[in-house]
Length: 75
Image (cartoon, rainbow, N blue to C red; front, side):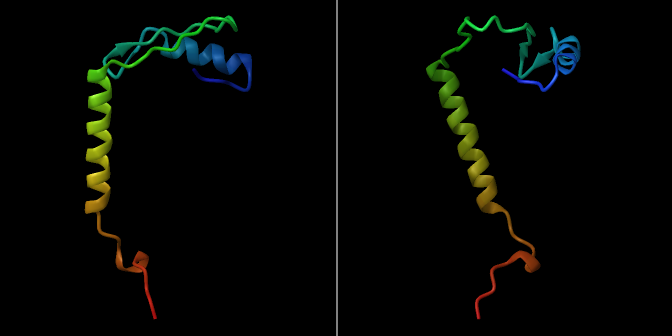
C-alpha cells in the first residue's frame, strides 16, 4: 500500500507501475475501496527465506570496516 499527497500523483504512479514486475511478481495497481483486507500471510518457506536474507545482511554489516575518520576514539 502506498499513500500519496495528491490524486494526480497516485494516478501517475498507478499508470507507471500497473502490471510491472517486482521481486518476481506482477504488480496490480488499484484504488483501495476502504474496506477490502489485502493482507497476505507469508508461507513458512517465504519466512525462512526472509530470515536467511536478514541474517546474511547482518553478517555483511558486521564485516564492514569503518574509515579511520569514523572510528570511535577513546582518550
